[in-house]
Image (cartoon, rainbow, N blue to C red; front, side):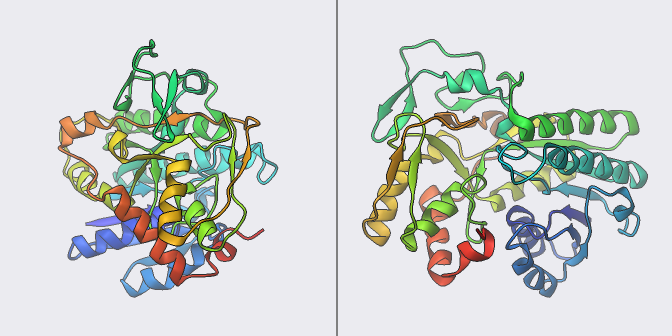
Length: 354
């Protein structure tokens, strides 16, 4: 089997590449990466030692795909994954669209030319922000939890947001580009006859994730705690009760193999840790204090753009259709990040320079 991974030297792309090589004898993996993400260069040599062919290229430019070999599958792990992209002054709105949407068009044209299957790693951020921001929540054990006595929007259960939850605007520029990419991918697949699967991911985390608060909160928090960097609970009540679920990227592998094999499963599924692998920042702080010792966390209750109190994806559709479930428990993921943080004291400077 021949696979192209875009964004191969990012955290998710490199994790999947390593896992595929280890699990699939004879697999040929080509990866394309622009290396504009701080820290991505650190993954290049280890992947090349495993036999992964790395091509420096920018998915925004269609010509970059001309030199790539024919493959059976394309896994899209390339995106600017920040919900603040295009509005925080670090990247223009046009750049967000160029990376996350027009880059997808170039991949789809490549799949069309080679009749390759396409797997898009999408995001929980395609779901509508207003109903998420107004979810009825209460505080239990240091974390927001859905208020069982209050009415909920359609598509929400105690297990999380299902695929039927609203995707109406606003969803952020990032979410809009990924949602548009989903629709285009499905249309390309139907029109030109190649398989397309959309996996909407919750928060992905593990050792080697780049230390950005807006893109890898678990890794950022643990790395900052180890180095006694300033930390702050932002928004809502200023106590860190916001909740996210967590999934290790390698846990996607069993699902990917089933998608490679084809079948009649749903084209769009949530892939996430779910309610059983969710945690608030306050709970993460308690874990860090137990693991590394105490560290003060400041409080700023002022709201932040696009923030929401509780984001947990319900992956029951993937479980029913594909018999898929997370395999790496949340404490194991946190410990993996902690060990990497202790072994790499300069990781924040490497992966998220000021």
